[in-house]
View (cartoon, rainbow, N blue to C red):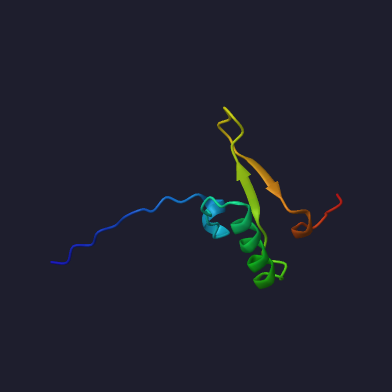
Length: 75
């Protein structure tokens, strides 16, 4: 007799879909080095960086987007 085990993996859609990755804390010099390497490797329109942080006492994060990585859409 063969026994099949099933399981369910719950993921956050945005994180999973866009393959987002958390970066470790960096000082100013490490951050500058990281950004230089990222910009050098990711000069295509699919790559971008979003910065998220929590304001003091907030339960929801605040997001910062780099303007050069966004496309303007006029409705």
